[in-house]
Image (cartoon, rainbow, N blue to C red):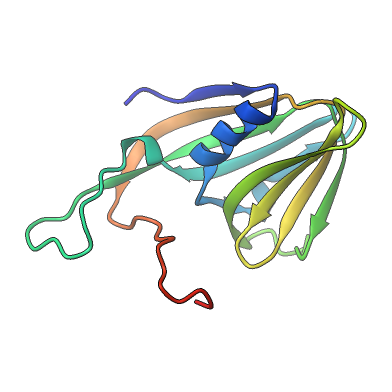
Length: 155
C-alpha cells in the first residue's frame, strides 16, 4: 500500500486521523512543541489498520501479517501544550495512542486531546483544527494486532 497522507481541518477529518492513529506507539521524546512556530509534532510507529485483515483468534494454519509504519502527526496554530500524567523527564517512556479528540471553545478554537493508554494525555490549545498525518517510511511486518475486544471491562 502507498504511504498515507491525510489533512484535517474539522472534527470529521480529525476523527479519520484518530482512526488511522489508533494504537500508534510513541516515545515521549518524539513529541515536540515548537512554540515560536505554533507547531506540535509527534513521530510514531502507527499500526496500519487500513490493511489489517482479520485472521481470526483460533486460526490453525499460518499467521496473518500486519504492518506498522513510521509516521508523523503534525498540528499547526497551536497556542499551548499541556501534559497530563506524563513525566517529561522520562523521554524513553513508551505511550500507546488511543484517540484524538476535539473540544470546541470559542469557535473555531478549542482543545485537541491526544489520549494515551494508562490515563495520560497531551492537550493542545489550538486556534483552529489544522493537522496532518504522513507516513515517512516503509512498512515492516508484525504478528501482533491490537486487541480491544475484551470480555472483562476491568481488564
